[in-house]
Image (cartoon, rainbow, N blue to C red):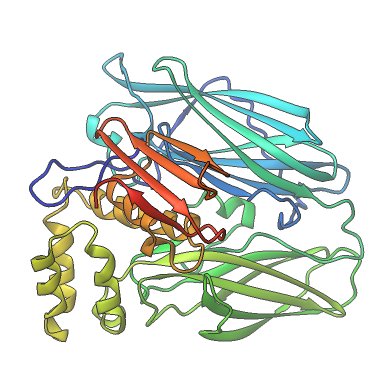
Length: 439
């Protein structure tokens, strides 16, 4: 369960920090496929190929279909911060143990599955809360071509916690004579390795705190059996929920034998507090394929903050008093970046560390609300988005698509806080408005 964001004066909150960390493997049959991999975009499944479990134990899972010359499989990447796990004392330190279970389903039937046991040991308690303390594992299920639902379960038998999510995966039946574009990744420029290797690289991210930093896109184009020696990539940036082009560009690459690694710079300078989509189209001869990736920008630098400062302050009203937000609104342009930094610094529950858990959790909730509750506009501006940002994940949600008054209804219960919120959708388009509960 996610903690509640609190106004100044209340107790501090904690939040998982996504970074890098060492891990101890015990009895985990983790296959690593190397050489000649074709990594394909999983766009044909109805389920998303990347899903986050927001309750404890919080973890992310995404699938990467893999097609080799004679075999095919789905690689499942699981990522979780140490703070999502329980660490009982063990032999002069702390050790978390959990089971990772993956099952593949097709047409309502289980067709494959496996279990891996993992353990993580630390010797100093501060390692549990460091920004870079996270677990990343890749697990492979051999599967024939087709569309699948992958159920991923993370279970902590010692502590009685368990989380379960379902993600989609699609393996195409044939590569020869066709072009396929892999998942597109964003990260620091100059990274080496295949797209599959970059999946576990902490420098590959979906959120950027300073848009002035150097960012590159990485992808692979599989083109076995296609003629042509030159690949052209055209890309454009749009708002995540619109098709308006904000900026665009092109890059050219020489084609390798069966697949070609693509990497090109993506300028983020001047982009403000928002969620964006990078759309890329790769062309080789007569073949043309498209892929995209959604990412967020958190305003940090003075350059990026200036054009969007007033819009960014709207969301801060969810967690700050009117006088504090008003002071930010009236700040001189030259003082905006400093005032912005001060606002978050005094809410940092661990000022002695690099991470600001309160700020990171705030933006995580904002992005989740933008994705999940965007019915007729920005998700964080909706009533459900506001409540989610203020209080986090509900303990339970009751839904009725057709209640007695004729309108779809959602009831959010926060048992630990003694709160109850009722939302009605009077439009039929998912625009739920709060009708009961604290304002």
